[in-house]
Structures are given as structure tokens and as C-alpha cells.
Length: 382
Ligand code: RRO
View: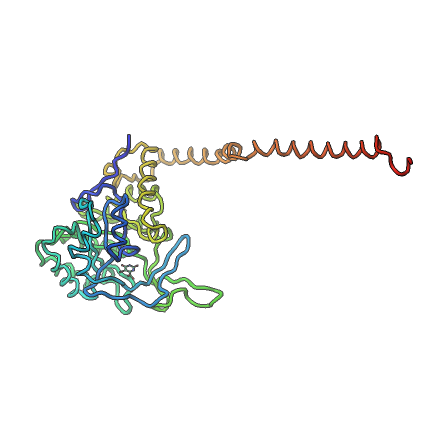
């Protein structure tokens, strides 16, 4: 049976539990339309500011196999663009059933409130993701690390009625005191229906030894870290939020997802859905089709019927699980012998080739002996 990959976030149905993270390839209707056409379960815009802006100077991104850095500085077309009927029709075209979500990252709390007021009663916007975690605004702290500023904005949002379903995007946290403070705060606000965790890990840098400088020019080379390097931090944050937040707050996991198997890890830790950012950036929107297929295959192989039945089912470490792991490791250790002998052109192909070479050598030796001592006379004999 084909596993059911659908889920809900804030009561909104997503046909698959995988969609794009705000940021990469999400700044224009054209790019967002490509996501809408893929197997992604929803479409999420680039974080918008009140007015359009170009972002930080180039080069502002750097990519490696295991990690990526960005110091984009919120390049975007401004809130009016992302919420206009024209843009939304261009994004969704004939498939208006796919949820379209808008991300906001105002430069000030007042800007965020102004942007939110523009969306009151807008039924074409399935949900709003309020980004409290952009690490790249030069001279500004990450809101999610400043409890007073965070409380202030959450209080002010509470005053706005009739908003589409709302969630907040959080930075990565590393310490249990921080988790406790943030969970206590978030749990007080009824309007928070989901949290998205994690944004990039701020103030990372990558340097070139040849050039003796950082790869990124803006913000003195300091930038947000993403990609596989942050996956384990993201998994832990998702797991903590699932343990600490009200059960009716959905957790959306993001950070380092490359494969369907990665998605499964996030589901087990408590994510109701996941977003893909860095991989979408490097692979393009076809990554959603691939990851959806891989998730389906992996679930089938493990006998899981639906995404919703998997969410948060990670078990504490136990002896039965450890025995299963030992058996798997044993099988894996035995597999290379099997797989190398069965792999195409492996030992099976090697032995006939060796025999042929040996035969050729024997033939040449015999031929040589035959021609020098046999029918062909040597000069000495003549
Ligand atoms: O645009 C950015 O520099 C940016 C944003 Br808004 C964000 O939330 N996270 C990030 O890594 N980069």
C-alpha cells in the first residue's frame, strides 16, 4: 500500500508533509510557481519587509557539500507584492488548493504589525510565518534570542483579530534554560498555532586559506549556517519543542534535510511537516519530487502507513532497539562481501579477465618457444 504522506499544520491540509523553507528560490512569483507545480505540500514566500529591498552586498552566499552560508540581508519585493491577488494567482495558477503561506521579517516590531494588518481577512493566504530569527540584519539582534523584544512583539500580535493561521520561526537554541524560557513564553499565546524550527545558525564563517579572507563579503564574513551541518541541532530543537510546547502547537522541522530518510528522522522527533531550504537552493524544485518519493519508499520499506501516525513516535533508548541495531550493523558488515562479489563487473568479471590474460601470456610464451626453436630457422642454424 502506498503510504499516506499528507499532514496538517495549524489545521491546514498539506497533500505531502514537505514544502520549501522561506529564503532560497522563494522571492518571485515565477520561482514560487515552480514549487507549486512540484510535489511540495505547500508554498512559502521569502520573508517580506514592508518595502522592497536589495539585501546585502555580493558575494553573500557560499556553498559546500555539508554546509552553506548566507548573509542575504532580506532581499525581497516588499509585502504588497507577496500578498497581492495578482502574485497569488501567478503562483498557484490552476491549483488553488495548494496552501500558500507568507513569511514576514519586519525591520522593526512596528513594521511587522503594519504588515500583519494588511493581511487581516485575506483568505487566499493559508498561513503566516512570522520570522523571529533572521541572523543577518547588521547591527540588530535576533528577536528570538531577546526575550523582552520577543514578548513585546508576541503581545502586539495578540491585539490583531482575524488574521490567517499564524506561526513563528525560531532560531536554533542550544541550552536548556533558553528552551524553558522560550517554551514558557510561546505557550501563553493562543494565536501561535505552529513553530518552525530552525532558522540558520547565526554568526558562522568560512575562510579561504589561499585568499586569506572570508568567502562572504557582507557583515565581515559572518553569516547564517545551514545544510547537513545543522541537521542534528535542528532535530534536537524539534524534539525539544514537541516535548515542551502545548500539544496543539504544530512543529515544522527545517535544517539539513537532503533525503526522504532525513524527513523520517524529523517526523519521529515530532515534526508534523518539514521544510527544505539549502537542498532546494542547490538542486532546484525537483528536490521536492525526489524527497517525497524517497520518503514514500522508506516508509513502505519500514511498514509505516501514514505520516500522521509517525509524528513524535521516537522511543527512549531501549535494549530491544539496541539489539536491532546490533543485528543491522552485523548485516551491514557482512553486506560488503556480498555486494562486492555481486556488484556488476566485480569479482565475477575479474576472474574471467585474469584467465584470459594468463592464457594470452601462455600462448605468447609457447609461440615464442615454437618460433625460436621450431620451424623458423635461426641465423645460427643457417
Ligand atoms: O535574508 C536573509 O539574510 C536570511 C533570513 Br530573512 C533568514 O531568516 N535566515 C537567513 O539565514 N537569511
